Image (tube, rainbow, N blue to C red; front, side, top):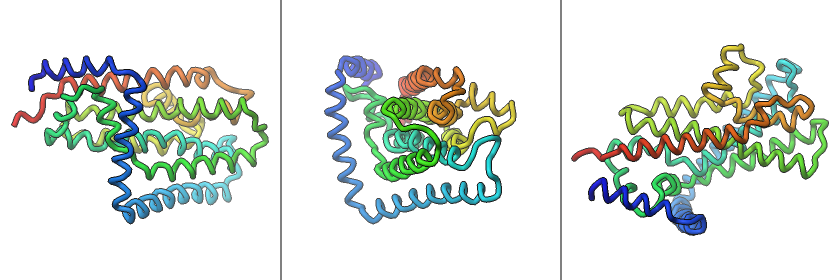
Amino acid sequence: MSEEIALKKQKKAHKRGFRFYCRIYRKILVQDLKSKMSYRSDFIISTLGMIATNVTGFISFWILFRNFPSINGWDYYEMLFLYGFSLVSLTPVQCLFDNNWSLRMNVYRGDFIKYCFRPINLFFYYQSEVFDIKGLGQLAFGIGTIAYAWAHIDLPFTLLALLKLILFLITASLIMIALQNAAAATCFWLTNSFYILDLAYKFRDFAKYPITIFSPVFRFIFTFVIPIAFIAYYPSLVILRPDEIPILTWLSPIIGVIFFLLSVTFWMYGARKYSGTGS
């Protein structure tokens, strides 16, 4: 098929409605889960491994705060809240966008070409093909950590506070998704783009710490260049420090949506430039 045919099919995909994509995604999800559950031992071992990793992070905080009562004004339970917040906000990118890790090899081998000729949104089609169910264990652990920390922080639990928490968790998720989308899309131009994607993923480790503990240079980088401060720190302030919320916290939802849309645009731009291996 020619590039012109592929372009026509993609234009047709833009006319599809929200209900159509929900129905398609449900069918793809069911098939993906069936294939994963056929290897139950692998699923169980992977899930236990992820839970063990998160428990290790929990324990590391406990050990750290046995020696230091606070870090730059942040006590144990506030840091624990940040940790849980980052885990929950990272779950969507873990569950829904895990196929970005395979993008480089699909492009390199030429397998990506099959996604270009279907009358469905290319970005949606590619990302929906894989659902990492192991991420649900991380979600449960993150929610439990937030609940545990909240119970020990002198803050009221109200419906409004819960709605704010959900809104800013979604905001934080959009930032991490955007970082991974953009990093993964570099494979359309760079042969060995794995290190860029891996670097973007490793930046998540800094998200569980308040940005105030870093030097001014890194505060600027983590806020305006690689915005990992919006994955946990700025969004969580709406709950942890309701009396001293900076303007960047209130701007977080807008920033999250903008970064996500820009990342999808960048991803799609690279996909449109893709022409196969030529073999």
